[in-house]
Amino acid sequence: MPKLRCLPFAFLFICISVQAQVPETIQVIDPPFWWVQMPVDKLQLQLYGENLGLYHATIDYPGVRLIRQVTVDSPNYLFLYLEISEEAKAGKMEIILNNVGEVKNKIRFDYELKTRESEKNRHQGFDASDVIYLMMPDRFANGNPDNDSAEGMLEKADRSNPERRQGGDIAGVMQHLDYIKDLGMTAIWFTPIIENNMAPEYGAYHGYAATNLYKVDPRYGTNAEYKALIEATHQKGMKVIMDMIHNHIGDRHWWMNDLPTTDWLHDFEKIGTTNFRGAVASDPHASQYDSVKLVNGWFVKEMPDLNQQNKLLVDYLIQNTLWWIEFSGIDGIRMDTYVYPDQEYMARWAKEVLAAYPHFNIVGEAWEKMKPISKWRMLF
Image (cartoon, rainbow, N blue to C red; front, side):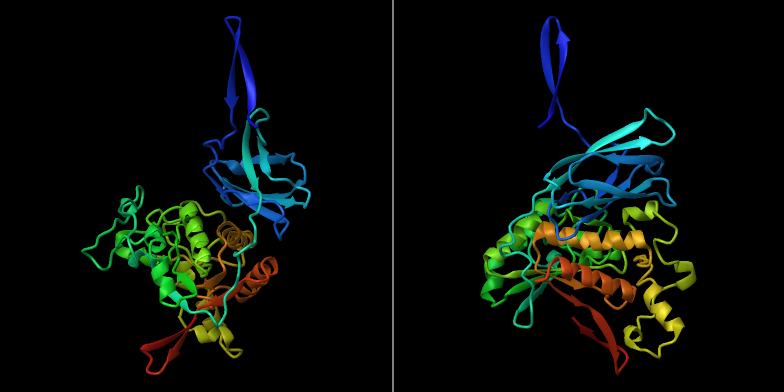
């Protein structure tokens, strides 16, 4: 409930409702909210704003304990690690940030812990018995022309140019679920739906150059619309597979303006691009040069390569996966460029995801060169 604060005025009391809001000094909070009774009891909060690294957090909320706070190379980040017990209740948890150098300078904001939804028809997994419809949302159906050229997006829809966005969106898919089901499909695999706010000449309608890992691209719709689409797909007796990318991001990701640490990315000047030799990942006799080049090289210069040996980043990426599974109710994940990230990281990621959601399913993408060398084969 909001707090009421009463002000005396001309012998009358005028009551105003004071709602706690996230102050402008905090530009980003990832994840934007969390849940109680989750299958994991740890939560990492990434806070971003001017000089937040100078602040020290305090939390007084039943069932929640602040166990660690981390400052990094950039003074504008503060990472908080929370332990959420089974006794914690859903609600808005106040977090207070105290400036280490200025006793009176405090930032207060509420962080929401939500109640988990029923597990019915969620996180079902998929297997070889499923008939999967691979869909690139931008090229399927335009159900809402109003979001074709969303505000703040660098690329607008241009139906006259096949190398530009065409306007397909979540609304278009929603309107054609019966068509997909009538084809005999039991699952839909969407190419990435998260924000790809890249320059027009890059052609990021494919979705593999993420610029915000917690936001659906507004040219497709909203996070709420994506969740509603998954619920509607489940009601039709079909499943949804989410395409994720943990190897790289797009060079327009907001991190790129102010990286948290100097080793958040692999050094392009030292490594260059990857060698695209996926077979190296499973070759015990591969040279160290080839192995490092495969994993640490950038896919292309517009796709900065994430360093999965950075522990803060590892926690961020795993938690981002758990957030999308819990929020949306997806049934499985197809991990893009599976052999290119750090192998130990990929093993840990898969282990923790499946431990949290035992009925879930994961597949990874691998490319293998075949003769003649100009041909390739993709292994789901």
